[in-house]
Image (tube, rainbow, N blue to C red; front, side, top):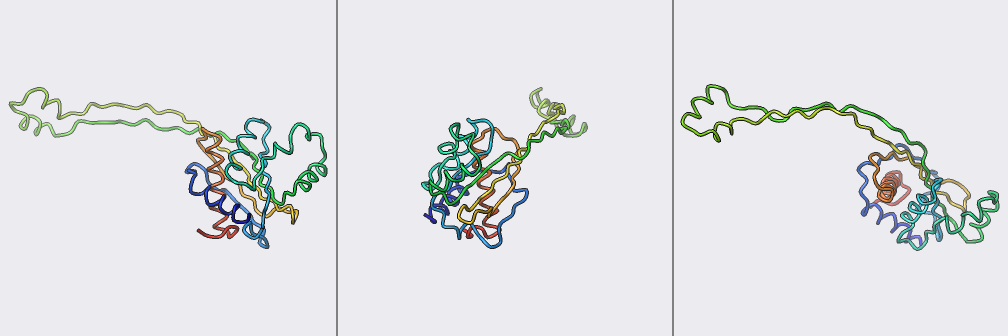
Length: 213
């Protein structure tokens, strides 16, 4: 089962494309690495208010890994009024030993101005034009020129999403890894989740939480 979790991280880093997502900061417990934790059953939790987004996110992370379970299967409308202790007992009774959480920390919009540009300009000097084009038809004469076009400037709004990803050991009852990512130009939730996981895996390999490639 330990290999299953490591295989999941390997698959993520090769199957995702996250050029618009990067790690802002991260921390790991120096005494524990994810690789050392023999996780057999891991709960995936997306801490978002929108139920549809929650399910998309959790399904995306859990897809294809037999030890991952989505939280909406266990923590849903029927348990929303439970205490923290009661919810934790559910996880203990279901033999979960690890938890991965993902939550939106902030959403910031930034407006920037993209200046206008000129495209095309005439080429060839006047002397060269008259001497070189003597006796040629209009098509050759006009070919000496490229009309000028101006692309006007415009304001561009970019939205940055800061997302925190945490990994907990329920056996140790402690946080063992956390990282914050920044994603821009988000158009698809599922692809963004993939990109976040890719950035997380890359950072975990860098800090020693996961073995190198």
